[in-house]
Image (cartoon, rainbow, N blue to C red; front, side):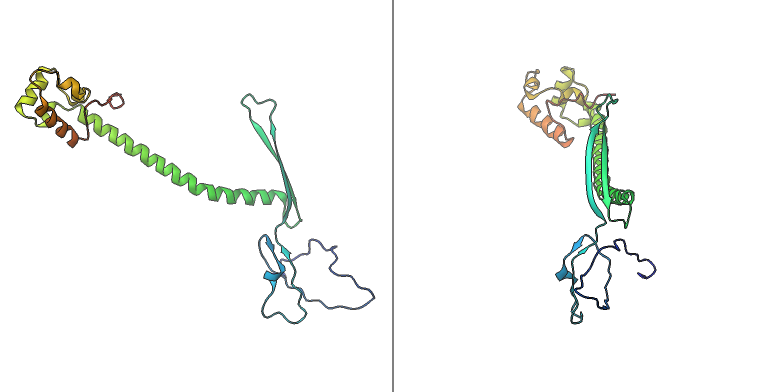
Length: 208
């Protein structure tokens, strides 16, 4: 209800000039809005003859000045933000800053929430993968279900765990006695099933 919540802030603003003394009756339409609205947008199809549409400025903030000043006593390069906000009197500068800050926080909160959730999900997934890989690396080569020839070659070479195996590269494996290309192909297939391969750096997985 505009009648109960209406006051003229700039009552001294002249709206017209008369060349002679006369009487005048004026009907003024008041509305709510945001920012700036041009006169053309304020025209209505049902306006009576003689209606004059004018520009509207709903923004209560007239001017904003800001300055960033270093804090002399700060040892960490901290700074102070100084703001000067001028309004038309319909609201206080403090309320304007509070309102603008709340809008900014609402918009940024979506990005902060999504990013934080995504990062947390990635971290959890990577941690679970690391645990799973470590568990696999600690298993005995007996669990790989290798052929007797390949298994015996690894045993003779002192390779007892999968971690020992993936730490070697293919050229090293081919140097072991009785270990040939056929055994290498078999081990590559078995390691592939475990998402492992020769020449891996397993230090990141073997940490306590």
